[in-house]
Every structure is written in C-alpha cells, then in structure tokens.
Image 1 (tube, rainbow, N blue to C red):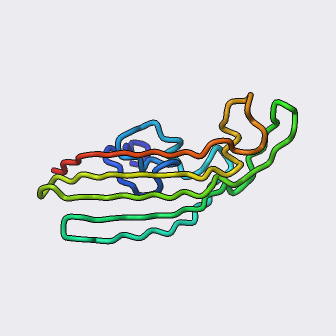
Image 2: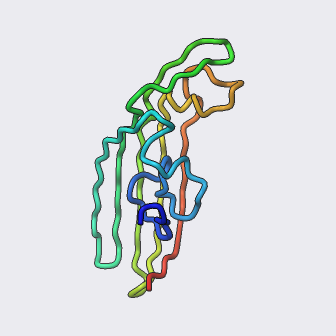
Image 3: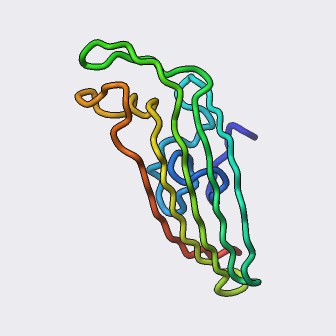
Length: 144
C-alpha cells in the first residue's frame, strides 16, 4: 500500500545534501524526487570500491537541475528564472564491525547553482546563489 509507505531505514541511495541520504538527520531539503512543482533531473556517476571484506569506499558526483525554471522576483523587483541546482560530490566510508553491525561516515558538498538562490532569505535574493552547502554524518547501524 503506497499510501501507508514509511521509510524507517534509509541508505545513501541518492545524494547527501539534497535528498534523504544524510544518515543521521531528518532535516533534509526534500524526500521527493522533484523540487516544488518544477520536476527534477539528476545525472549521477557513482563508484564503489570494496577495499577489504569489511571496508567499502564510495564516491559519487551529481549534476542536478529542475526540469522547468524556478521563477521569482528579487527584492529589487528583478525577474529571475533559473534551473541549475548545482553539482554535488559525495563520499562514504563503510566498515562492518560485526555480522549485523556497520558504521558509516558520509560527506556531501553541493556547489550550489543559481536556482538555489530561490531558497535564500528574501533580503539576499539576487539571482545568484551565495552559499554552497555541505554536510557530514556518521552512524552505527544494527540490522536484525
């Protein structure tokens, strides 16, 4: 039943900064695969390396944009129309401590595109994103 679906155990399946891939926090930007009503396009390249039977490294790069432009007016009443969310780099190290216990370290950095200016406070909206976004996370996970 899709209406009753609830995610209780989330992995770094997409990206760390924009979606729910942040392992220890629920304050992520969105859990939907679209931004507002503008759709979402993500081109992703991911590499996993199993260094040992217990240690795994992952690296991902993503270019993200909305399918349609985000449109708004700045405080100076300039009309802005942008679709570039930005380019994100994610890294993850996972170590299996015991049969059912793993620990993960995750890091994500979003080189914010100009569409992210839409989400800034009104007083600094100018059509250019002012800040890149980064997050790091760690977890210990017991699976039963």
